[in-house]
Amino acid sequence: MTTSPATGDEQSDGANGRRRRAASVMVPITILKSAVDEGAVCMDGTPPAYHLDPGSGAGNKSWIGKLEGGAWCSSVRTCRLTKGTGRGSSDHMTKEIPFTGIMSSSAAANPDFYNWNRVKIRYYDGGSFAGDTYNKDSGTYLRGQRIWNAAVRHLLSIGMASADQLQRPCLPVDQLLLTGCSSGGLAVILHCDEFRAFFPSPGTTVKCLADAGLYLDAVDVSGGRSLRSYFRDIVATQGAAKNLPPACTARLDATSCFLPQNIIDDIKTPIFLLNTAYDFIQIVLSLMRFLQDFRNQMVASVKRFSSSKRNGLFINSCFAHCQSELPGTWNNAAGGSPAIQNKVIAKSVGDWYFSRAEVKAIDCPYTCDNTCDDII
Image (cartoon, rainbow, N blue to C red; front, side, top):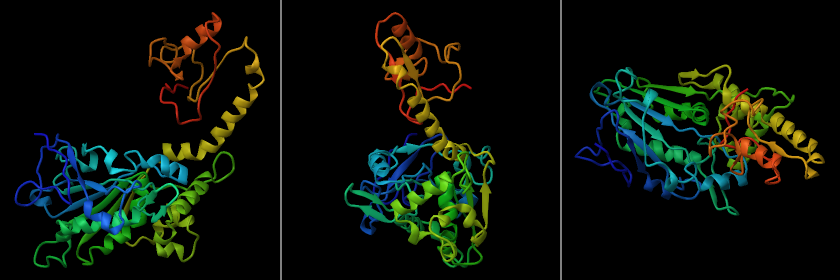
């Protein structure tokens, strides 16, 4: 059975205002219209949203809250570009999503948490739910902290509060887990103790799981600290300094307190860090400045060469080496190989050789090319 997206402040189907659905059914969106009155809005001013799959049986009073990830915006320009997408507007957000992994309702795949209330708070602010500002020139709201507060308070009002022992002292204590991945994992680290504070009873089990959120202030291959520089721009653009953990800001600057390694030792709530020591995204972020400088040098080196009409160029932004030998990179079919302005490598070389067209193709900087078949 397929369910339609919910609107208003909660999903309503039956007397208890919740839906039960089979494990394979998509989980519909819930638009949190009441949050607008608190200024808790997406980048474009639309209401925030979440997806809720209710618990059952023994898990009926236990909750998993997941903070969605999805990168950051670190300048007025990048936030403005994000505003009209599903990362900045609930109008453009996918209306139904599958719950997988720790959010799955399959007992076989997720035996410990499958029957809990599982809710995913969507990511609309580009600041790990920590920003609180408004850019008048671009009309962009960066209100992640307000979205966080409004979403949790709303979830408390529709049932999450029942997990706290002080709210139901005669009933058994149940559990809550706050989780998130990537920028959502960083958000968990930033908000873990805040989440605990919503449930004041010491007998209520509240824990956090941060997946791929341990972003490091590490020296990159160019000898700089590109991630620190990037995070400094995020904190400034988002107006996040006032919302960062006070135990950290009492001793360090705001940028340092957006970096998990400076926060985790002071978190009082039990937290589990799930990370790979070779985190692909962090490696790419740390390499990015070096990679762009390398690209710029290559492009500059062929400037004089490209002025000759007899010469040809196809310099793409893929991670590859030797692109004329493999079917994945030498294929004349549309979509069959890397392309620049919709012209693939084989066609470009043929047009140059047979003088059918002048070919001086230089790709936009990484990561804009979605035609790459990255083979090294």
